[in-house]
Every structure is written in C-alpha cells, then in structure tokens.
Amino acid sequence: MIAEALCETVQILAMVFVLMTVIEYFELRTQRRVSRWMTREPLRQYLLASFLGATPGCVGAFACVSLYVHGFLSMGAITACMISTSGDEAFVMLAKFPLVALVLFILLFVLGVLGGFLMDSIVRRFGITKDKECVIEVHRLERARARHRHFMKEHVFEHIIKQHLPKLFAWVFGALLVIHLIPNLESTISHLPTPMLIFSAAVVGLVPGSGPHIPFVLLFADGTIPFSVLLTSSVVQDGHGMLPLLSYTMRDSAIVKAFNLVYGLLVGTVAALVFG
Image (cartoon, rainbow, N blue to C red; front, side, top):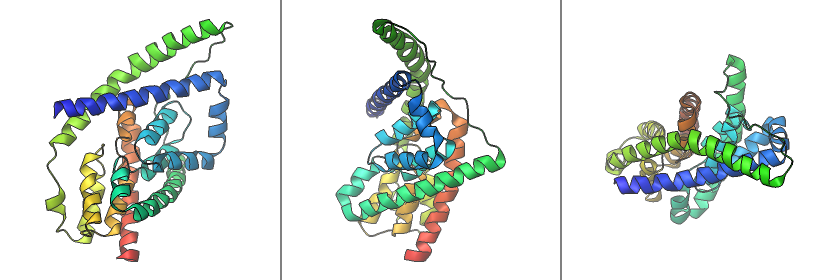
C-alpha cells in the first residue's frame, strides 16, 4: 500500500515539476507576453482551462494549477478546470462506455466555462482575493549561458525544487495513502435512492484523488445508477488535479471545492429532473 502510494506520488511530482519548469521558462523567454495574453480576456481563460481539464487524465489539471499558481488564471478559471476534469476515471469511462463518455466530456467542458464565469462573478461580488501568487522574477542577463545557469539555479532549484516539491510530496503522498485505506464503496451506495446517490457522489467528490470515484463509473456502466449521479460525481471530483493546489494554498482549494460541491449538487438535481 505504501509502495503504491509512493509510486503514484513520484509520478505526479515528476509531471508537475516538468510543467512548472516549462511554464516558468516560457514566461521568462517571452518577457511575460504569454501571461498578458492569457489574463487579458476572462473568457479565453475559461475556455483554455475547461479544455485542459476535459482532456482525459490529470496532466491538463496539473498544467492549470501551475498556471494558476503563477497568476495566469483567475479563481474562476481554475474552478472551470476542476469542474471539467474527470481525472483517471476518464480512461475507465472511455473503455466502458465511449460514446456516453465523449458526450459527458463535452457537457463538462460547457459546465466548466459557465461555472468559471459564475465563480469569478461571486469573487468580484464578495471581494474574494486569491492567495499569494508565485511571482516569476525576470532578470536581464546578456549571455545565453548565464541566463540558463541563472534559470536552473534560481528558478528550478531554489524556487520549484526547494519551495514547491517538499510540500507537494507531503500532500500528495498523505492524501493517496488515506485514499488507499478507504474501503470499497460499491456495495454500500448501489442500493440508495437517486437523491441520496447524488448527495453521496457529491460528498465523495470532495476527496482529492481518483480512486474513490471509480465505483460510480462502474455502477453506471452496469446500469445500476442514473446518468445524473455520474454527472454529479464528475463535476465535484477532480482526480489528482487538486493535490498540487492543496500543497500551495489550502484556502483557495477550499473555496474551489465548496463551489464545486454546491454546483455539482445543483447540476445533478437538474439532470435527475430532466433525465430521471
């Protein structure tokens, strides 16, 4: 169990490390033109974040977290990503019910864009501010060798490796270890009425990580639960995508998860009324 959690942690850290390094490098090379292009238009952020989130797996969500940490995305945009992502469950869905899965991904993309817009409206209405941003300091160095040496030392080693990776390791490894201890939920939730199933899917969706949500995918594939329950689970849960954000800011993570919980319950209830 410990070895499995440690293996997953190393894989996640490796992906996040590569993504953060690439983002910082391009931001420095373009002299902030990338960040200015992304932050100029909110709709552009929602579309990009929802698209990255809707792609199967967790890499798109990891990329969005890296962009958010560096101030490229608003709180609404990172919310849009977390709404649209299905984590590793996306691959299980594609294997079990590919056509329904594709329809679900498109629906999650649309719901992500709408949710991002709504979240930023709430943020402006109540004056909610983002937690600290990880500012990328731009230094003008004439020689290419000096620039690369400075980037490796100050940005990769001092910033990403020393500041981010230790906290990220602790959060990811701890969360995955707890998830592996959760017993199989399938036999417990399969006999509940639809309203309770929707509520259960939303509550389980608060757990960061992919494992606890797979029973809902398998139950839907077997025809045991309705589409509204699967949709609720997909909206609230975010695979492993929330783990890097938790390691950086618990406050913003809690705000995003609280919004997604309410949003997922509303979406699931409407879907139950429409589709049954």
